[in-house]
Length: 147
Image 1 (tube, rainbow, N blue to C red):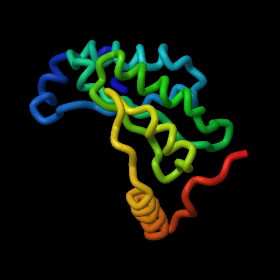
Image 2: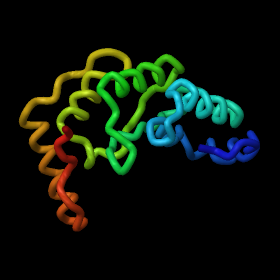
Image 3: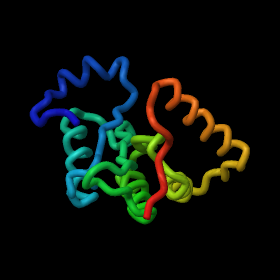
């Protein structure tokens, strides 16, 4: 997120090469209300003369320490709130930490309407790529079951 007080002049120098921004909006980790956290993001970027369509917020889909996985409804609320503010897309961190429930929550929260359902073969291929990527980096397995 930009620091408050960033000038539009600094944005104009960057806008020639930047088509958008993907600010981390981990409202759940900081225990902020979703609407407030997203409001701060859009206000800050509007101050740098960036439109809502150029803001592609990133939500946190991980579980660590006191930070719990989002509920599927919270994932949908995040996507709907961002779309309602004019964003043309969203993302989530971190895909390698997402379990099947979180993948399904993201799939059912499509921005701008329904998206084509992922086939089981596509899902298996993507899952295997994530496993291979984690192994190559020396990291532990993907996600985990939740109680």
